[in-house]
Image (tube, rainbow, N blue to C red; front, side, top):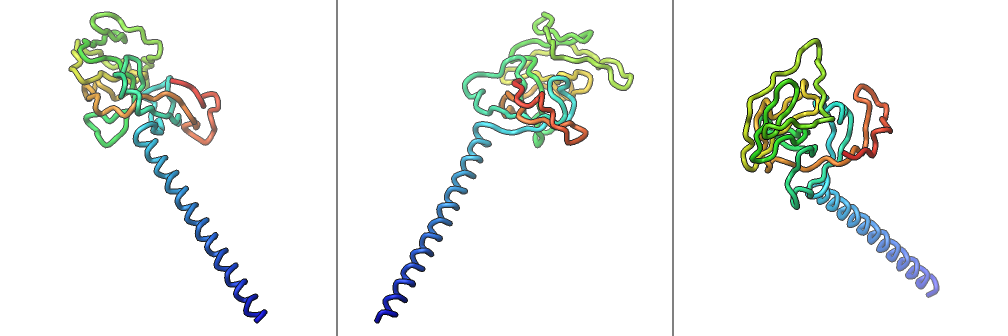
Length: 203
């Protein structure tokens, strides 16, 4: 009788431990599922990471900079001149680009002698670089263009090495992902050296 009680107690304890183990696994799976769902929600609706692949935004952004993009900001206010945004351009709708907003809907944009004009007035652009690459002169300017409603005129800061609205035209605002607002990480483009001086830089 005593042995029977002992065996029953051991069996009951084993069943209890198995129940706790199964419950623990279920809790871990539930926590992982919630974390994944939250990460997907944040990436889809709030913030998105983006890596700079080219030098079209030098010296503001460097190859190897990793940005965070605020996807909520334009739900409450339209893009402003000077914003650095991530978007999908009309000629390559499957790729993400990053450029600066230069022309707003209804404005007239032109460029001559390395100077951009908005509605006939020269634009002050301390961020713009017109460096001549490989012995090449400046890219030619362009005649006045009026930005259609619902569109933007985009340009890279590295003006002689940027495929932007001068090449593929105006950007539909509906193609904008969001506004880049911080460099959260930065690698040397040619190696694995961390650029700590750029980490945390606001844009």
